[in-house]
Length: 137
Ligand code: ZN
Image 1: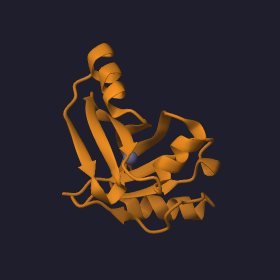
Image 2: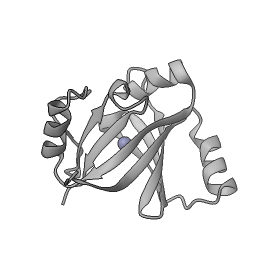
Image 3: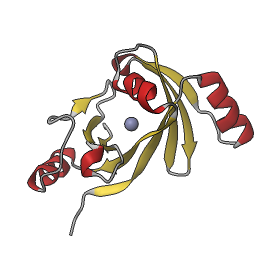
Image 4: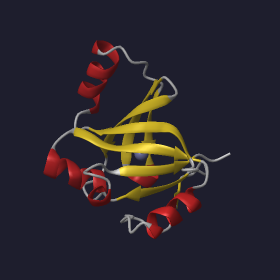
């Protein structure tokens, strides 16, 4: 069965104190910090720490009205979601719908680099927020 998934693109960790989080993940845990970016469309600051063929992303909201900001109020800092790399997000989403899986966004969202992504609700994924992620060319 072709499940269209080819890897783990990233794990996102929600943080309230980016500097302190970087001190731990880079200086103590020893991961390489590739860059820190302001991601306008997500209203957040994101630190990218490549790890093998995947990446850890530290996400700190820059506004109070984002999904991650609301999640932080409820849960505190912690693992927010995992992103599964897919080759065909439309097919992956059709498969979710055909299996009565609850999607948070019914159409893929697009990042400025052409990446398409969509979230599966944790209610349908055993408590884990899963991002389907198709990178742009
Ligand atoms: Zn993500």
